[in-house]
Length: 355
Image (cartoon, rainbow, N blue to C red):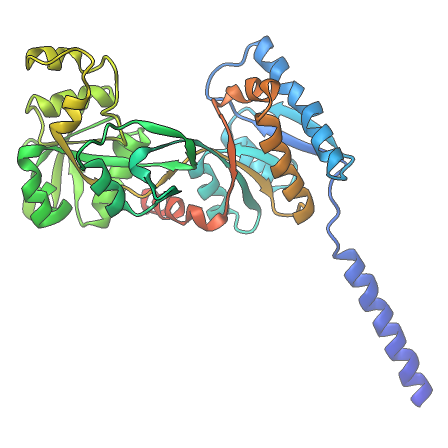
C-alpha cells in the first residue's frame, strides 16, 4: 500500500510540473504593432513608420530578444482594441480614454506600457521636481512673475483643463470655490474637446453641477450656461471682453505670441505682450489630469519583453530617425507608465457612459 501511495504521489508531482511548465509565458515570434494615425498618412510617412520595425528589432536583440516586429496601420481605434482583446495585435497606440475603455470593458486584457510626454509648465516644477498637487500648481500660476512658459528640462505625461476668471471676480471663487460657477455663463470648446468641454463637464459633475445651454441657468440646481467659442485663445479674449463670466481652456492657453494682439492694442498695450493677459486673469480650478497618448500591450506578453520593448521605444525616439517616424503622433518622448495613473480616465469613461 505504501508503494502504491508513493507511486501516486510521484505521478501527481509530475503532473504538477507539467502544468507549471504549460503556464510559462510564451512570447510571440512576431510582435504585431498597430497605429491609428489622427491624420492621413502618405507614402513617405508610411515608409518612416515601417522603418521603426528594424530599429525596434535591433534594440530588442540587444536586450536578448530575437523577435520580428510588424507594424501596420489600423482602420480604427475600435478595430485595434478588438484585435488586442482577442490577442491578434500585441501592441497598440491608444489614447488615454481608449486605454480606459479596453481596461474597463476587457479587464485583464491590456496593460499600459508608456505614455508620451510634453514639456512641463514652470508652475508644475517645485524644488527641481514635478508636482501634481492642483493647489500648488494653481498658486504658482496665480503668483507674481508667472509667465505661462514651459521648462524643457522637465517632462510630464498629462495636462490639465483650467477654469479661468477675471481678476475682479476672483474673490468670489476664493470664498465659495468652484460652486460660485453655478448660474454663471462660461465659454467652452466643442463638446468633443477634452480640455475644452469633456473634462470640465466631469469636473462640474463631481461638484453637483452641469452644463446647460439655456440663457437663464438655475443656480440652485447647479446649472452652468455654456457657449462654444472656437479656439482656446479666442475664449480667453471673450473673457477679457466681459462676454462670458469664465472659460475652460487647456492649461496654460494664456501663453501665445500673437493671439491676443487685438485685445492688447484695444487696451493700449504692446502687441505680443501676453503677460498682460496673465496678469488680468486668475486660475480657479484644474480638472483631473488628461493623460497623453499611450503605448499599451496585451497582458499576455512576458514582463521581460514588456520591459525590453519600453526601453526600445524610449531609445528609438531619442534618435533622429526614430523621432521623425513617431511624428505620426507628434510624440517627442516617452515615460514608463502605471495602470493606476489612469484611474481618473476610467472614472471619466464611466461618467460619460452612465446610460
